[in-house]
Length: 89
Image 1 (cartoon, rainbow, N blue to C red):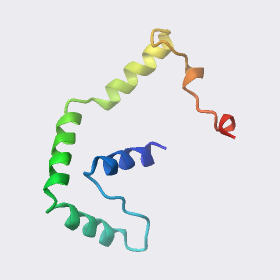
Image 2 (cartoon, one colour):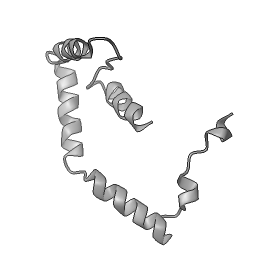
Image 3 (spheres, rainbow, N blue to C red):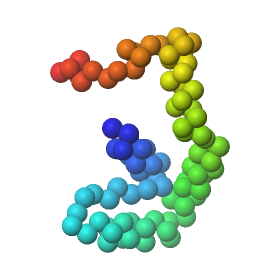
Image 4 (cartoon, rainbow, N blue to C red):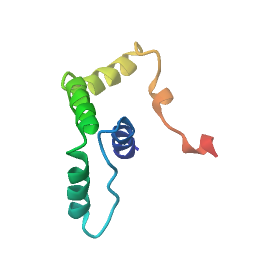
């Protein structure tokens, strides 16, 4: 799910383009880059996003969250974190 959510978020922000699966994905990636590079708005949004995540430490944040849940100080339990697709039916 994360592999879909991350790129979708960047696409909504306007700093990325979705490149679907194909026989020649590198050509599609190159085409998307060529379309985005001259777009000043997309470049500005990408730069702003890069500045935002430059201060993030994803592995540390994930570890701290898991330890907090394990200690019971996160306000939820591991059971709360499990996604149950059956509930959505």
